[in-house]
Length: 451
Image 1 (cartoon, rainbow, N blue to C red):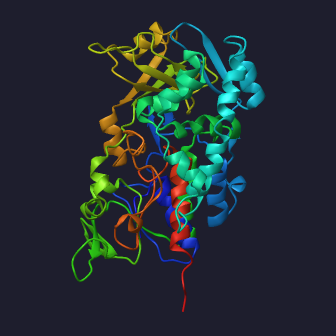
Image 2: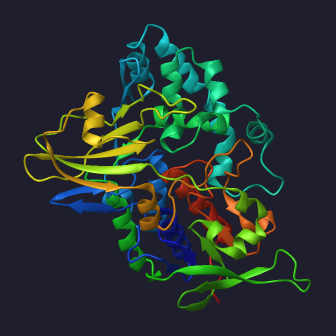
Image 3: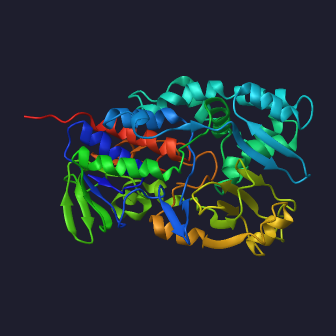
């Protein structure tokens, strides 16, 4: 049984079904896919959630191991320009993919900065090599390797590591950007998490022409092919656990409770926020001390006229917040989506308090579309969490001890047969890391034993 039909839930259900198991997929909403969806208004359509991914091998492996290869159903395209950053001092950086591209583009800020950036990126290679086995497979019986244990035990936070390793504040802003956009302060993020810069720069950032929502749609179609039973409109309220004779912790999961009655299962894979299930939260005391990372405000714009942006554009605050006063919000403008002829579609992510209307804020930061706005769809963080029945960003970083590794509840004193996947179990936020937790769960479940 799989609880939750976001990307990780779909991936876990398909992988386990391909291994010969009878899989029941329970989803609280009316459709599957979670944040991998689309929203539309007045002839415009936008990706509701993520529009790009790292680690394309995660998606390719999922498709190959559950049916037809990805290349026969979808096209993954690498971005030549990862993002355009417009910094507070007025300088601009169009960050190119690849080592040589990064060297040239960052050097345009000031001679020598390109070398500093590529050296910083390369410095995360040992970290990736040490942690990769823990991300791709179940934890070894004897625990992680000495190299991985040393990385995870490090006491340095990302902000301090960037101050030590990068000479220019713009480069530090560049390296911290993925975490700031997700609502984290760099001093709460462990230094090893900075390997995201290495993955992005070296292995690339990838998009699906027409929108990443197509990925969720293709996986949903595959559910029937793999024989997965899907029940939408079903809210799971708790896990059912058969305790040992002493009634203490541990025991074994025997199913779930839903608003439509109990359902039995030998294995339960939770692909939603596990803190919402009392039986799971009680078995993992540390879980109750965590908080979700809330998504940014998302504003979809339908604009008259051809697109004037060819890459994601990051507008960094010109007046950062200080103690006692608000500063400018971080604005991230993503061109894309579909629009009527002669029009264009943007999605703007807003991190921080926006104290004026968005077109005015964009104009003040150099992107004036005030006379082009045809339609607007404004979605607050609370609305997004309600629509998705949880945050796709997982757990908020709260220092180096925050649990951010794939969870097998039984390993932490929880019930046997209970697994947690998705954003709240992933080592890092984002679609590929959630997908890796599903692969780990499927490996733990193993192939079905047929009589």
